[in-house]
Image (cartoon, rainbow, N blue to C red; front, top):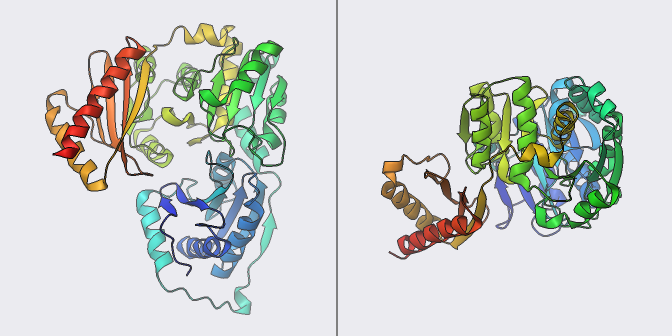
Length: 456
């Protein structure tokens, strides 16, 4: 087995690193072989995003899976949610998504999907690592030679599931003009055609198929200047921004204003709750505006730890109709599949625009609005654990949520302090209904409190 290098990131988001430095073809092949053994050597589907390293890593993964005795189906360049959906369609033992999501193009990653079409949980990843760290039998008998096949209808399967669940006639009748920023990722292959199938006129932004990200790949408001300009210049009803693997969404309203990832989830949530009232799951970092929206429909919101797999697992347990990763612009629609899916988000948004006959800004004017602030404090893991325990004790009277860090609710604000999974810091997220100054003051207050606790 190739040694796991110190700076390689391994967790519920899979195995992630800089290609040629911490992530090599040999290491990718070894992890794939371990996943093949872990999955029972059934059929494994492999897909990737548009990164230049994708072909090399794809071939390494396929080789590792074949060496484990698994059959391989190559889906090529496909959105990550598409891979999850086709696992069930093909009754596969699992899938490997080759994508580093919103990380820069020099990064790549392996994300592992089980036979139930969900990413491996923390327990599952730990079991996979145990398999990886055990001596592997690398001999393959001739009778064990497996096959490679090609899937050429993966996205069609995904798109058909969405189209079967929305009012396409209403969207087509609305004749909406939309702008779509694909970040030169997988959306460059699918988004324009998908939106046109719903009757939209599409103005593309960053839709070249070269995998070179010409804006920072994370679809946060600060990175969407070109999309905002395109919306206003072309009179578009809405702008959609995706990340490179097509699981995250961010919206721009008809005035060219980016909503931000937190608020981009609200229109899809509204549409789902109008269709089917039921429980909602959100990660603990999600805006309180989602809870206010759920209260309008008299449905509960259950919180989960940060991470798509945690939201999806909570949705299964709670029978939720909708899931939200507000901090990353991820919506999970259970009718299609409980996974982050920008294509479902776009379809639901368009359906709401068509049926309500309102603009994005008019719909958003009925939502709660909170100002937010983010801070971080460098801190060791041990120091972070001690500080978070002290904060939880100090604010015990407010019954803080302790799922993932400490979330404390006040009358018109809330704050979350949690240890980062990716760097040695404590992150502080604050939200206030009053003003940006109040949100910043709340974040600064907890930064000072935590700093004092760490120094004790």
